[in-house]
Image (cartoon, rainbow, N blue to C red; front, side):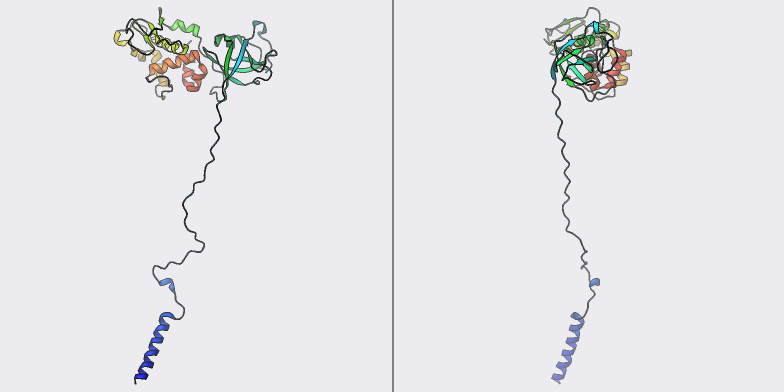
Amino acid sequence: MITSRLAILGLWVGLLYYLLYGGDHDTTSLPNSPSPTVGAKRPTADTATPTPTATPTPTPQPLTYRVTYYGAEFQGGAMYCGDGGYDLNDPTTIAAGDGGPSCGTRLRLCSESACQLVVVKDRCGGCGPNHLDLSKAAWEALGQPETVEAQLVTDFADSHPAIGGDYSQFSGSLPIGLSTRYDGCSPTYGCTVSYNYYDAGSNTVVMQDDHRRERLVHEQCHAHQAQSIGRRLAPSEYDLAPWYQTEEGVSYAQIAGDWPYPYEFSTEQSLLEDFAEACQLWYTDAVRLVEISNVRYAWMRGNMP
């Protein structure tokens, strides 16, 4: 009986073993046993594709040129580059020598006192590669220099060369009797101010031993603002605040009032300073004014002599 029972028990154990471990098994019903995805790869960290770094183009350094100017005997004569006849009163015309800049090249010429945008429109037969022959007007606009520094202009914003104001006519818009001092002192404030300024109380431009032409013209442009007010100023108005209500001030504010302050020379950012700096650039470096703000250049061209 024991043997039979053991045999029967062995049959049941074998059957149970078969049911549990024998034959094919469908594992899809087993939880937490996902089938691997064919072709799946281990995730890797995102790798940014490096962007090639452009090699910065160096800013061309100014070249020094000897300069002369066309005589009046060339007036109306044909020019090598085919731009009509020579006009001695055109401040944008220059001729270059053999080996120098080619026809149509735009250059920014700067002397010690002024800058002028010019275009090569002619050839100078007797000039070498470092010699430019200017129109008489260009030569005079630059202060009749013997040499200039020239820089290539490739991104000029206007379709025509910038022509600045007539400084000789500017004096007519300044207060009568305007004087200039270079000792930093004025009748109104004494010697207590450490920067250049226009003293409206004594009608004096006060310079701190600063003989730079552009800084002098900047203060003269403040004197022009005082003249534009059109009346004698009270001491409380020596800051020229009434200029904002003048026709000129209102007009300038319409084109410049909402613009970011574009200049770096001054820590005071106001429309009075904005106008004075645009005004001085109009008379000393119109090309630079265009580079800073073509809108300001256009306003000056339409409203200042």
